[in-house]
Amino acid sequence: MYLIVGLGNPEEDYSNTRHNMGFNTINKISKEYDIEVNKKKFKGLYGTGMIEGKKVILLKPQTFMNLSGESVKEVVDFYKIEHNDIIVIYDDMDVDLGTIKIRKKGGPGSHNGMKSVVQYLGTDFARIRVGIGKPEDEDFIRYVIGPIPEEEKEMLDKSTTTAKDAVVEIIKSGVDNAMNKFN
Image 1 (cartoon, rainbow, N blue to C red):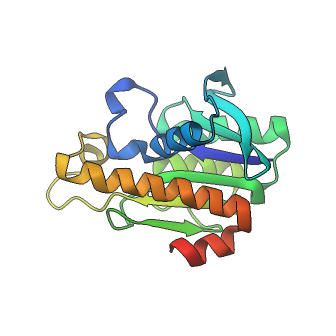
Image 2 (image 1 turned 60 degrees about the vertical axis):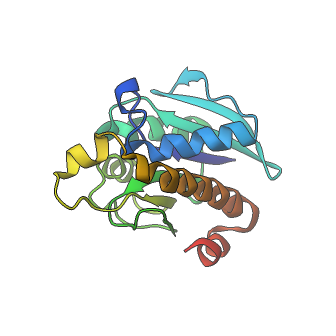
């Protein structure tokens, strides 16, 4: 069983921000594979279904971003999910706008949601970083939780579609193959 986690902010005010690329990717997976993400438990919204013949749990933590690990840990413990069957999707300023990067493991970088997940799980799980680019002349917080300029929306939409495809590739043929295909 795979646990696919999209990081984001649950409040409606943040739904159209760069910080919600994980949620947006989960929404696309949910739609394509007809997996409703509407059950409330584990400090999150989740749904179960099948992708490429494998059972999956889609999770959108409903904690504040910097507490996302609490939600993820509850699901991992309840379902006894192996860390190599976890995929976390999140926005990353260190990845160019419009691209994604897949990693097998690693640290959290500057992302507070990932800091929380790493605090609870360690570093040995796959992650898909959706590139949002770095701000040129505004502070980082306003950049990630502020409105997305019209000229970036299409690029970010394509990135979350690519992230969705990367999730499917990881499930189908493993992280290494997905890295070779998408990185």
